Image 1 (cartoon, rainbow, N blue to C red):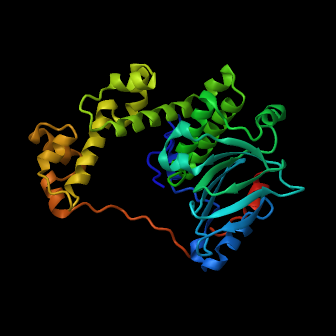
Image 2 (image 1 turned 90 degrees about the vertical axis):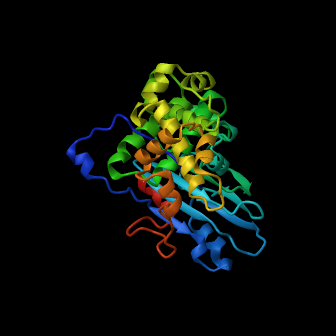
Image 3 (image 1 turned 60 degrees about the horizontal axis):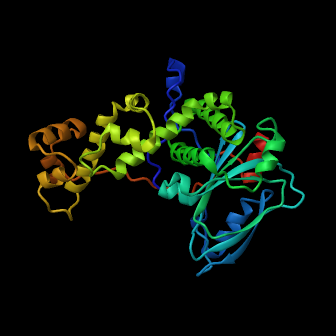
Length: 357
């Protein structure tokens, strides 16, 4: 899953104390079944859900079940990212009978995360205390477990139980959950309270909309609109006629609002130029792309070789020719197979939920 750009909180204080707490906020559970023998993988995954759901193995071509479970405790909320093997694998998921937990949760299928489709896949609202079962053959899901009490009126939640969150608020919520998933890996301790508050306000506004609640959710809504604009730009980078006016027209936002959203990134034009320079860099450093540097630059809208070379050097600290000669080495991210749980963290999803109930 490409986490891409995440949530930018523009109302965070910048005191010395806050800046000092800049280390990463760890997830409380990080369990990969691929660290275990294939015959044991599903049992490991099932055990991690004891007390929350009963899982039954149904189908696998070779008996394996490569999956990953990550849990973040964000105040009184839990964010759970589940990556499943997908096609060719299946298991049944059932809420436990006589459940000790009564948390409500939003579940967004993983297709929305991987394809960044936003409105194509929408979240569902469920409750651990209510009967529910489903055959799972998806590639995973992102779930946000809500506090047991005092979040939204129970009558409102009951009316939405097991329903797909459709309409404008459902699409907005789906887009925001995608953003949240992309942000978690880079979240710092100082940012947690603000992300929690933004997430809480947006979920409440979407589940029980009112004018005051929509105002409270202004910051995360802005983050969603910004992400939609970025997605539009990145699908139209090769279109040399792409302008701020085009983006405003397709997104249905005013030019002034679009400029305000992109102001922390240097402006709309600067963002488009940066993304196009990144695309030229990818082409230049690709050993299979033997085109002349200028032809690669021209593909992405740079018609003046001298201006392109200056922009490239300003952005990346070397000329296009130097980049082609030395290549471009990027950081390689990997997962430590041996360390599935951080020290002192909860061992199961059930224990994590009890800890925030």
